[in-house]
Image (cartoon, rainbow, N blue to C red; front, side, top):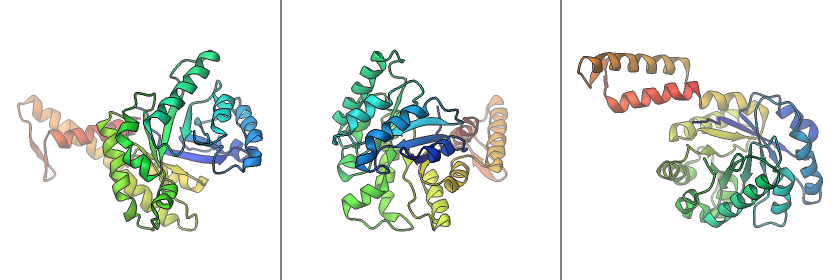
Length: 285
């Protein structure tokens, strides 16, 4: 299973910031054609994105296009589905048919341009009450989507909520994203950005909460957020060492016919071992 711990947004109309982002230790860069680009600059920003595909980079490259409900989305997709693109981030998805439409358009462009059909990832952002309500239908739409992303900014705006520092108001939506993704057989989802750049401690706490809830990574809006994000969604050396001890001890006991043991005073059985193996898999990924 692929893992995306950190995904850094970069405004598609700022070539220098895009080039800088491609050198940073983020797992993916998201070139943003939506909120970061003024209406008048969107056509030119598409050309900047297309020119980016040939640049050297150390990360996966995604593009957030405008929502399908807007006048810009189709032209966005036509401009950016090119060799070198790893994936599309589709904002404000509220219905399964939106995801199917985007999938169909991307597949048509892949065939037209001799690209492997299905090779471009498609990440829907769930960021409205309608999107959360339709979550199961969206994730069972039968598309190329492997994971979703949750967007708290638009979600709290849509619901009339106050986005607080402890994010308690996000708990039901976050849990829904994780549990429905699991039930639909998708990868763990990606968590929302943290908007307050003056509060790095709040960001670290938000990332820790998301990791504990079962998200695989978090979207970032500033380079300073990359390191804490990668750390939050990676097993620590201590956790990895303990996981390996648990697996080794249990496998030795199992070979002797025992399915439950104690290690350092902790009861170890199959669910505990499964969790330890997951930690090892995450570290390897």
